[in-house]
Image (cartoon, rainbow, N blue to C red; front, side, top):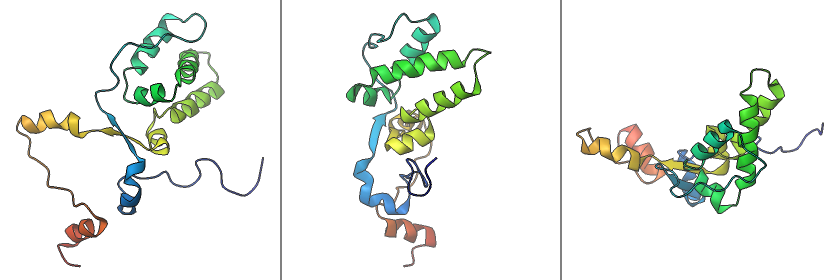
Length: 157
């Protein structure tokens, strides 16, 4: 095992809501909450099981599927589906569960994976029907770090 030096994904994950993140806000990709439309891609591996077909169909409707399609990750998603279906079996080893979690991270299916890929799901479109139904509208979010600090400290500074 190598010693010292930076490791992949070492340190805290980037936080899109951090005060100093205004400078790199353009680096985050906002994915639509409604997910991906269109036909599900063809299964790229050998014969798929019924469970693999269910997982494949469900995953390609998720918001992250837009990015997988953009980057041609059909094979990676299929390998994840195959390993996930195997990990669901009662006799599956712990190492298979670890592999599935790592694959889910790299595909942006977990919160840490979304942060590492700098993807966010657009929750505003999801919340707007609730607001229209009579929920109170939240106050406007200040645009700069200085304005956010002023709003927290009561307007001083």
